[in-house]
Length: 580
Image 1: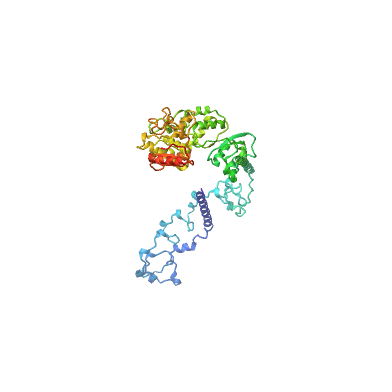
Image 2 (image 1 turned 90 degrees about the horizontal axis):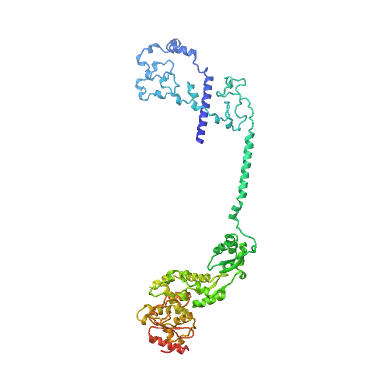
């Protein structure tokens, strides 16, 4: 668009220049007319017929000498009365190769050959004889849209009036039929005022447009203001943290903070329960309070619609915490756990037994597969080993099934974190068999360093050849059967032989085929150390272990004779064992 405007301005200026040159040419036509006397003189032969001899002109004797004849090839026609006496010596005649080319003659010499007249298309307007026909070529007519108002010209379209020049465009008295013409056909330069511009009438202001522009401006500002007002709440959310005020509205709700939850996780829980208004409200308040890192897992009774700061303070206040903690000790068996949960939660034992009747509701099926071909425990012992010992905070009004699920979920998390199943497979045993070994270690061991060694003894007896019948022959399995049968467990020195070799005991570890290999199921609920000892057994060839003092120290042996020596040590230390 800009390039088109520039071209139009250039065409306009070129047209204006041609008109001025044409005017100058017309005004000087009389001065350029040839002198009548000069025309007569040239018709009479110039110097040859003017009687120059009588006025001291050249002698005719030289006029007849052919040697002095002027070479017409080099006559420019510009000399008056050329004297052949002074003709140039032919020896020094100009080289015809350098004669001027008439094609490039400028037309200023007399005698110019019209055949080589300059092409009017390229005339600059500076030569005499300029053909004005080309001055009116419409291609170079100035575009009235871009007239600057600096010369008299026909009235232009008001749409392009800039109003920046005194008087604007010419008044409407000028005719639009031709450039600079009056209605009668005359040129304004011929007017009585000497060609001066006439004072122009002031154009009426277009007040309608101004009012419309003002109205549109006010309308736009109103729309912008209304949009800003409507969008304020949404935009403010990006800069102002949405939050409630005060301590809440009095309506309470119970929320749970789970183990290992981050502040963001707690914030999501509070927002979902309408305790706080936004995630940022709680997180920013917690980050501003150094004590927020001491928020404990558990259940809290909080008001709804609290400020973020008030919610953080409530979670740090022991009074808002609904403490219903129950500790399950390591080595407790299922029936013991049921009794304790029943007392703490007010749930009948029968409800726990019923809920745990199908342990696969809580534990994945692959956990109950063995590689030694033996079946797994069912009934009351079906869920044994999976109720992980820990301190639990159960929700208010929890059911038996909810309590069991909380405990089994914790077991799965702990064993998953330690890679229990993969480590058991690396030992060429199933995870279930390793769990049984861990439960035996939990029942037998007192000191933590003995878990890996006891596990090694168990694996050497069951999975390595050489030990009689591959039977464990442990009294802790006898006592487990006594407990789940409703009987009182006994010290090893008081266990009868009939109880050790009871054919009705599914947990018999003395007599094949029942006693061969690991028992059919765990005999306790092992803790983390016992579980780790089962999947990371110590290196050694031991096949016997026995407690040798009241502090729980274990003695290990690779033969029967070595085992008898350890029993003698135990007897000397006051343990009531029978000597070999």
